[in-house]
Amino acid sequence: MKKLLIIVMLLALSASSALARESFETRHRISIRIGYHNWFPDTTETEGTRPDDDGVVEDGEWEYIWDQAYRIQDFDSATLELGYEYLFLRWFGLGLDLGIYGNQREYDFNVSGFEVDSRMTINVFHIDLNPRFHWQTGRTDLYGGPLLGLYTASAEFVADVDYGPYSAKFDDSERGDGFGWGLMAGFEVRLNKHFGVALEDRLSFAVIDEFKPDDEGPLNAGGNVLTLSGVVHF
Image 1 (cartoon, rainbow, N blue to C red):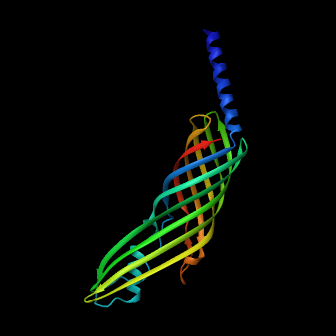
Image 2 (image 1 turned 135 degrees about the horizontal axis):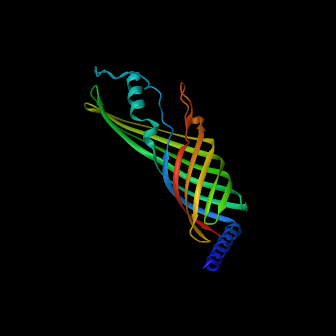
Image 3 (image 1 turned 120 degrees about the vertical axis):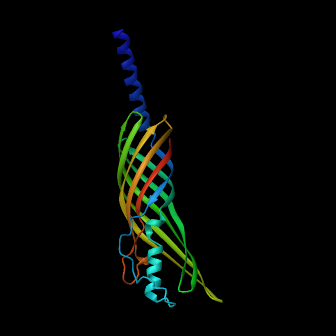
């Protein structure tokens, strides 16, 4: 019985060692990820003055309405990403990630005789370069590292305004580019030599100066992204 147990242990160790060598030999890693993106919340006080519904809407009252209606954390959304990594060593690789996230919000209201239907759309596309350090043990791989990327953000605002017999439409759009940086970490379970499933989390900061109003800071297009991915190794 003891001999049989020793043989089983030796076979298990041999299989684990063989699988570890296979993961080292597969240098290319492609992943398709779906997940959810959370913006850093805007906790500043609402700009402008609260509308008093006196029949006249001042500039400060419009500012209050839009600032209260469209907070950046309301644009949290799903994300889709594609990643590639080349493993130079068993414990080190370099990854390139492409991703997109965005959302659309609508806000309709009546104030001082004005009937307003509005919507805002925000989209962000990013490319990240990501050196990764790996700790592989058999079928599992714990990895992480810093990231540096290019972020492109676009925003569109549309409002239809009716006041008695009068109507008007307003639309505005902005686009800006900026650099991003942050950290990521992931954990993968290898199903076999060529396929795996991974859970990844990324925290990034990306400053877009083109969105900077006269009296506010630039847009931070980063945030936190949690994804689940299917992975192919070859």
